[in-house]
Image (cartoon, rainbow, N blue to C red):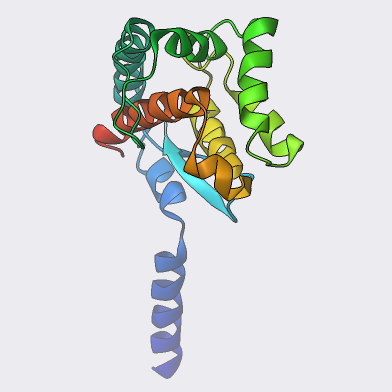
Length: 184
């Protein structure tokens, strides 16, 4: 009788340890979260990729692009509108990323005093974010942006350049849109 109890307890413990992803696969759930490693945080950050999340991001991208190019994009740090010229540079960096735009944004970010590899990580993840994003790109871009913040000097954080504020505003609005829809 005790052997039966031990077997039952072991079966219960093993069943409760089965990862939820495996359980979801067995149940036919197709809206599983996809995990992308974060270069600045230990472990992984779950990012659900579903049609509703993708649609929310797409809608917000159009809104952000319009606000940035019209000069109505507002910095979440200062509450002040980002100048239209800087908004256009940020949008270009996240769409076409021409050499001139890259140089302007990189020069602004280098003022942070952050490690050039951290800045390069952000510079690598921004192009096409607003025009043709790929799965995981937003999360990688957010992680890289947070890496710049974590490695920036106090003078940069106290008085950041407008390009940095514009990037922050765009990333914040897009990530808020992604988080506003129900996740699986």
